Length: 429
Ligand SMILES: Cc1cc2nc3c(=O)[nH]c(=O)nc-3n(C[C@H](O)[C@H](O)[C@H](O)COP(=O)(O)OP(=O)(O)OC[C@H]3O[C@@H](n4cnc5c(N)ncnc54)[C@H](O)[C@@H]3O)c2cc1C
Image (tube, rainbow, N blue to C red; front, side, top):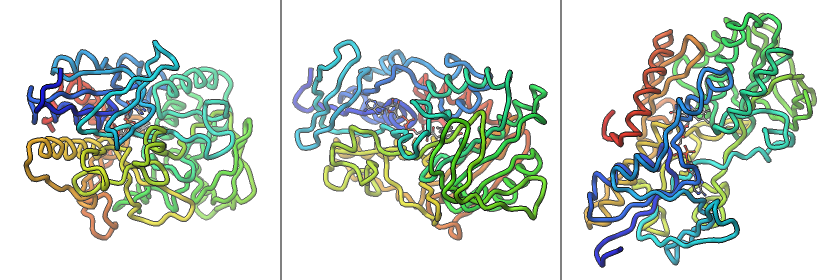
């Protein structure tokens, strides 16, 4: 029941950005206003752990929890539904629910937060991805489970492996983590010497990450590749994937055991028996069809994470459009990590609360966003920090700490973060 002064805030997405924003809004607004989270999934998934799932090191249950009890315990409403359409002029979203296929229901809002993450765009390269293509993905829990089944078969009947991120991707960190964990899994299984491993990326140098690199990242990543005997292809543009082969329009292949050898991949192909390639991301269909997004379907926001045309529409997380801070000839997009998604979500939530209560909004310019991240590499890793991730490299302060403690820190963080999100303690560090 909506009273005359009560506002209804609808949040689409119950993951890093959406769930953080929901709890933060509740802290700000208390019982005075109504908050509803809509997600097509009924569980929060700790996506960073999907890098371990294919090797049997995590189950779905260990890295997820149901959204409804956590939200309802804070008196936040939850709807498991897919938002099919957003109509910002009428201030409604149209949803469909699995129980009533073909039917749509409209939910009215006073304020909307779009936290829908990415559409994983396998269509960017013919033959890419697990839906009728020939490569695997770890972008969703379902994909990671499929990659797990294929891995079980692969270790019985091995061959070459290709891992990487195709042109236009943003999620390079996950691809690096996956290739180093895969290499570690092969060593643990005692089959490393039977399996040639190649990392393929559109980045111009290892450790570019779509942001122009970080201090020492190139040297450290190259050292990891040589030490673990993983070859790497740079500036790669993949033309298509066919069964057992990745075909290149361009790329340069570096060899871990020969520093001077670089092969031109233009018009050539590399064989694989197991492949995991991260595709580019787009905004989700509901945003792309709403007119709220840019040409790739990401929402362009101001320093308050508010839409330029609709002051009651905000966005946070991967759904937000971010300009690339560094050039990348073969095509790199900008990574938006879990931590950055949370910072955006806190900012958007506080500004929604301020708008409702007639208070001044607080800016958080994209160029001032910092990033904390751990790149896991099996039993090793790198802790990374930069104070201004989306600023040009020369204007950032950066630090990288490699070592086994990075892996231990990631394990501890996984447990802590799941607990923090399940119990709604989003004001904790
Ligand atoms: C394999 C992998 C490893 C990663 N590792 C790290 C890491 O180590 N550290 C780090 O900081 N970041 C990491 N990231 C990035 C991190 O996962 C993202 O930054 C984070 O998930 C973004 O959160 P989000 O809420 O914006 O989007 P998402 O997490 O993608 O969530 C979007 C939510 O919206 C819902 N949704 C989408 N469309 C609709 C719709 N139409 N209707 C209803 N619901 C909808 C989805 O179901 C989903 O729950 C990793 C990413 C991947 C893929």
